[in-house]
Image (cartoon, rainbow, N blue to C red):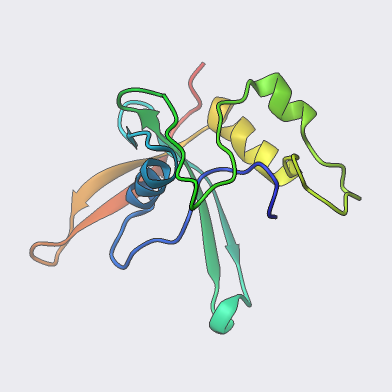
Length: 147
């Protein structure tokens, strides 16, 4: 999907929670500090099988809330471009299902993820102590969409 517009992302470090991974990747790629608090949550989760090394792949889309400046400071080693895009422009950039190239386009799947982040129900994360000393867990629970 090189050349297409997509959401910031990357691989989780061992022991790293979904929201922490997304916040780290957004900060590394765009310079923007964001967190799960005050309105964020898991938007969607895709679980696919048969990826590298014969293992499954979890793709988690998380809505975060900006914690300061929203000025993008793009990491040129990671991205070819980064910018805030108005919703109507994103919708106009969707590649048709038969597209052979996604250059400058957005996939229908990414459009669906973004739409859910803007107006869908979120799965909120709450830090919770575990039965193992010194180890906490994140419990994700569905909540109603904000109106």
